Image 1: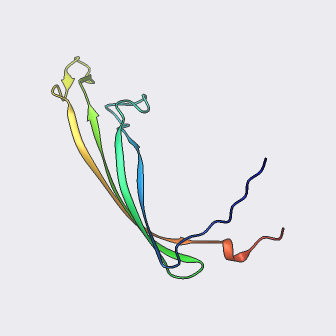
Image 2: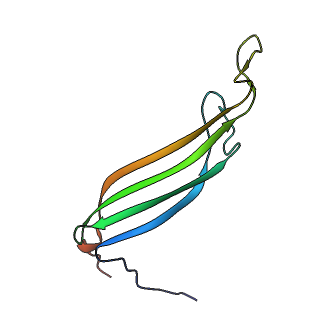
Length: 105
């Protein structure tokens, strides 16, 4: 069975929420993806300028958590009490929509 619904958006602007997971990947965690993942929460605001262009602003935050890691050649532990940090993310951009060019069916 195939179900098809028409898509729609708000004519002027939209508000929404974002969610996901955040984690640290770098010298203290070089090869373990999703290790000690933390919640990512955020929101967005989009303002449609016309049929093709929109302005969008995202903001969100997550935490990173690194526990004891022996990284130095002498076996000394870096951040023996652990490393905890809140990461804040803010982004703004212009969106361009190709829909109005249309596709022949």
